[in-house]
Length: 151
Image (cartoon, rainbow, N blue to C red):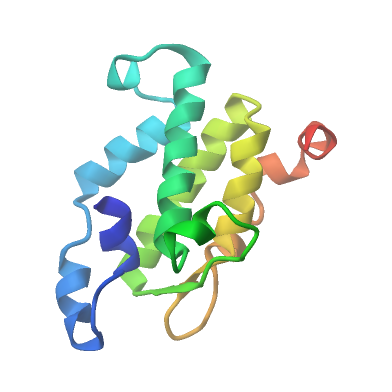
């Protein structure tokens, strides 16, 4: 539901303002950022790096699922459809991606780091078409030689 409200899937154009008001609260965003970055203590009752990677995997899957036009395309090589976000939703998306990249960097989570790189291109600001990738482009993960070698 959080990702769906962020991407406003299922909203008709006249429902955009209502969708913006359904964005997660700052507290919810902060909690999710902590989970994605691996800063939460024993998230969801799980322990260790594996659980943090699973949380990032679930986040990436949720984003890809909402961007995909059909259930079959979630698992195919077909590129997802870009989502145009309002300004508030865009800032939330940037925060979540930044936190997920921090966690991927900390845990050497190459697979989810790659998936975040791909998905960030498909979340765009409505008017300018600026994407999340431009905002997280300077993340330290991208400059790590070991990331690109492991990938």
